[in-house]
Length: 617
Image (cartoon, rainbow, N blue to C red; front, side, top):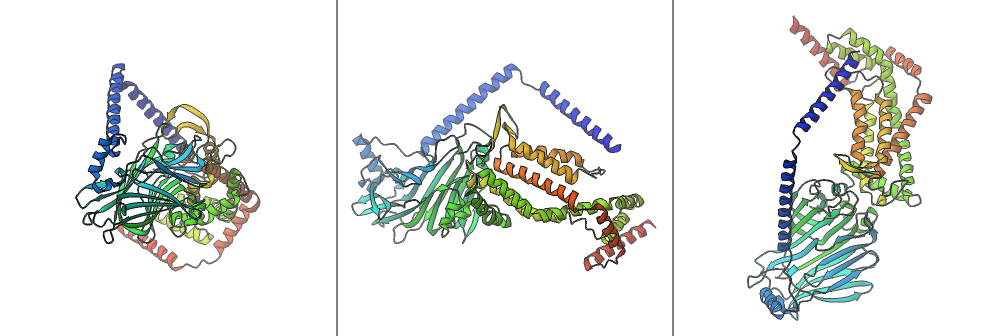
């Protein structure tokens, strides 16, 4: 009765607080004049921001030269000094195979377009990792006559040739017929990896060796997914350094680091990555990541802005750096082909044992199932197999609950008997557990054993490339949310759509919690209402998973259905409460030998009891 009264008081309290909030919001709503003033102020702020962005873009872009204007060309050549030997040309060269198409400009010698030929974005447009100036790659150096030059302003002379089946593009920024800075690209058939070499010839008297030569690589991640906020969560700058150590910059806020001994840099864009790997490790790199997504948006075109500054060494006054470009999917099956570079480590499998399970068990297992089954059926079958494999753990957990349920009347009796002596109550309760052969912690151990599986699968579904754009029932993409209804407004933390799989998963979780914690749930004084928490958790999961991969919600829905079924079988056909009670009574008759830990705990509790009694005298 007291618990019911407490629940009613809590509900009344919530209603009163909600009513006060509504009244406060009504009283403080802006007048029409204030709304117009705020709107005008917001328009001024947006105009200023847009003006600054335009100014910033103009500052970062190389100067545009009218190649038809001989005076402008002459001025350009005068500015860059000896590198004016190469004639300016705005042409580009295409390197492509069955997988990727790269467009490389004479100006800057850099990749100005990188397109995936076998993949489309959520809106059916081609996947571009580089396009419309979202990326730049250049060397910044000082010449012997103290000119500070950047290769994005220099013109290179292209030469396209063949080496067997490989396409080779050599671009040279010349100071004379035999003196040049060269960018060399070599593309193989059916390969995302492109060999990339930077070298100089005869420039030991042109480049000032006392000043640093810096490699600068910048990229703004282009949005590819339906939910930009969800995509941004798995978009990060990852790097391999210090003999195989994998580190990351923050995925949720601006971040920067200076690291040493760099093997590769990965600008990951959820399911696609732009990676620069080197054969001779970079000694140092200054890395930064800027978050461009503050909230869910249908118009936001970019996710993060990455930048890396890498000093390059001169050997005898000359440059020589052998590297690789990778523009392609963040797919374990693809990146595993580059084992010597360790590019598969750029995938966020998870940390520690969780990542190991995801990488070496779930990823190959799902790849095997999906090789002959539709994606959704493969998820269901994998879920069934995982739950059956974990059924012994479920059995142990339910057996522990059954034993505790049998002992509950005796524990309640001890509570009444020693209600004024908490220490004695604890002692007698532990003694009862010991005689009955029951451990109150035995129900927690199975749950802990399932945690690595739970977390590994939590990381598997949002990052598995094999799920990308695979449909099942009403979900058109199992790697994104399934929207069965579009809302005309946005609900905070929920979104502007309704996903069905999270609803089904939340309902299944609710019934699962009803079976495991819904019974015998007394309200403890000063403690949260556990029944309220039981109702709240599925509701929170509903909000949490509404924007998550529908494949993950499908897994939780099927997993909880199977678990409920297993528990019903255990309860109705395997466990017998009378037999459990009889076994406990037999255990209580047997002499129980204490181990060292139990004896020590008993002695400590007895000492505490004696001290308490002595203090009352």
